[in-house]
Length: 417
Length: 123
Image (cartoon, rainbow over all chains, first blue to last red; front, side, top):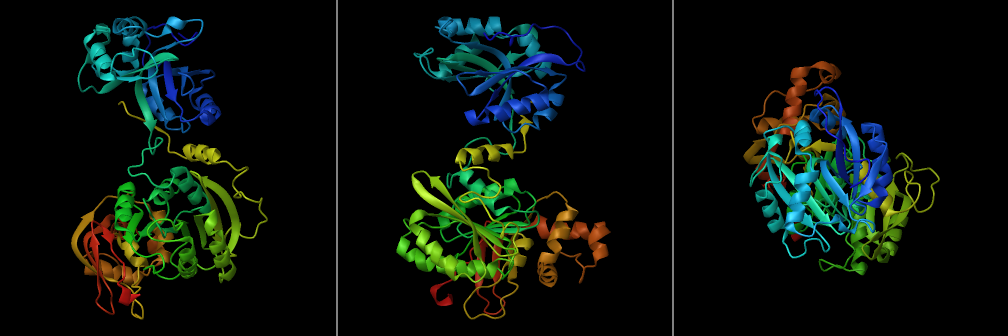
């Protein structure tokens, strides 16, 4: 058990804040500082302890009601999930017996250490609970997670006075996480409204890179954004999220399967439109597009080659200069190092698009460049820039993009009402 | 496919001069509610070809758009802004086709996605 985390109960009226223990999940160590800052600023939490190795934080916080907590959590972007902490027991060198050695041991831990009545004060009485177990390492190794969950459901571990019952389909999920570093029992309360890590339907371009491309294009309200090679639609999804006020978010692809995946990944994003069309013969009016953001073909799939890309890129550049609003139009293009000569020759011959920034990025093991090209009238087009990074970046590093992307989310949303 | 998208599209068959706007043939039209945002409409208005928008709407039996729009209407005419919002953003052609105004070539729309690929002899 962590000192200073467990609290003693005590009756209070609902308008009077009462101290409750909560836990939160962070996506990466790099989010820790931002998470602590948000907890301090929004919930007044001065001390948050790193738990379960490093993926979680546990903290105590004054809460007047679940709804009030929900309003506050809406401002928190650095955390993936927040839950009510029933108990946390750390396994350390000095307390090697922290982890349960049998199912009975675990049932005893839940019955004795979880204050069910206090939880019901925040989450409400009359709830139906279900148990969910996550297990890693050597704890209760001989048992499957469903077997452990079943034994807890039948084990009478919930204090009856809380007014909660155990059910196969509960409206509240009690998560029991077991690992070699500790045991955490909690109830999920809120998760990020627009995305948690890795919840894309069909995997495609790394969403963090897609975010970086869109961010580099600097989309503004009312603008029309086009992806010439939409692939699985990740750029459109990020654009929609980053700038909800975009006028239109259009994506083309030649390939039927890509069009279908892109359509799945952008379902429900009402400004997005997928079309089946050719990037070298685009069925859009001249000057109708403000931004083009595309992950160009590298030439290794779809029967292409780096040599063929010389011709392909030339045609794409010609289309870009036709489609983009003259002077203020801008494009952000991604391709690999092998295709740099192709890009360089396109840039040399371009009528009005000029290179603003070229930034290196690693895509898996593939060394790539992102090119920001713009007309002379685009904002930032004539500034002297730091080499190799965009003007909004201090330093290179994809992890920094990942962090900024998370901090641009809408905030946590209650899953328990 | 929304009429906002349609307003940006033009036929790209080689040699065609009367390429805008595509005629819309709609077999199935769906309506989805979108939050009303007059500022968005004010920003989008200058980007639209109003005549093409109005004619296409009428072809789909969507009435209520004026022949021309004044600044005053964009600023404070709630009834006009509501109609503009609805037709621009809430109407989706799910099944149908886009038809080239010059050649009559049909580009099908299936599940809201237009297929605008050209045949080799059209490039």
